[in-house]
Amino acid sequence: MNCRFNEWDIEEYLIYDTEKDCPVSSTAELMLGAGRLSCGNDVFCREGTVQAGLLAQSISKGEATTDDLELLREVIEIVHANADCEMARSAAKQALWLLDEYPDVWEQHVTRKLCPMLACKALYTVHADPAKCTGCGACTAVCPQGAIRGGEGLIHIIDNDKCDRCGACIAVCPESAIIKAGSVKPKTPDEPVPAGTFEGGGRRKRRGRA
Ligand code: SF4
Ligand code: SF4
Image 1 (spheres, rainbow, N blue to C red):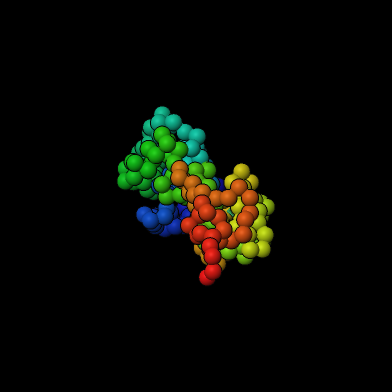
Image 2 (spheres, rainbow, N blue to C red):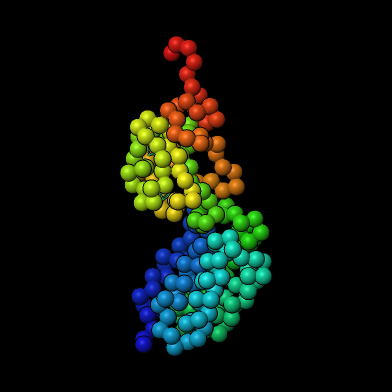
């Protein structure tokens, strides 16, 4: 099998948006992406990339320990130093940069199970902000998991056990009311209530005459 390095759009991985990209999930995608395109001739490219990608993926899911983080660095350094393949070396070089540049972010994923970028799907939740939701229903119409409850004019509620973080609701909400949350969750009603009436949200119920 021939090397498929030319098919690999490395630029896609090298452009790193510090505002929204997460070094952990980026490393997982980068290493697993290289592993998928490996021709298999070089063991560091064939197996080292995948091993590193799976380790980064477990960190991204909040399932890893500090030992796993150390092991990840070791695997990436081995790939970087030993791979015959340019694709594997390039991926490892970028991954090492992500490890060195954002040590605190890696640490938070491992020790606090938090993704400060709110990019790792297992480490954030999604909520309709009761202060902004007008009950238009656009989100329920696009949710593939049936994870959103509500009704016309009601504040909608997202069941995060059903939600797979596809982001479709965030994209369609005309009020930009759907937000991601890490350790601090917004206060939301237990059941759908008329928009604008939830006292715990930002928008207060009107009292008396307008
Ligand atoms: S799309 Fe936005 S405003 Fe409309 S019901 Fe859903 S959360 Fe509320
Ligand atoms: S992120 Fe996707 S699955 Fe989750 S509530 Fe929104 S549309 Fe549904």
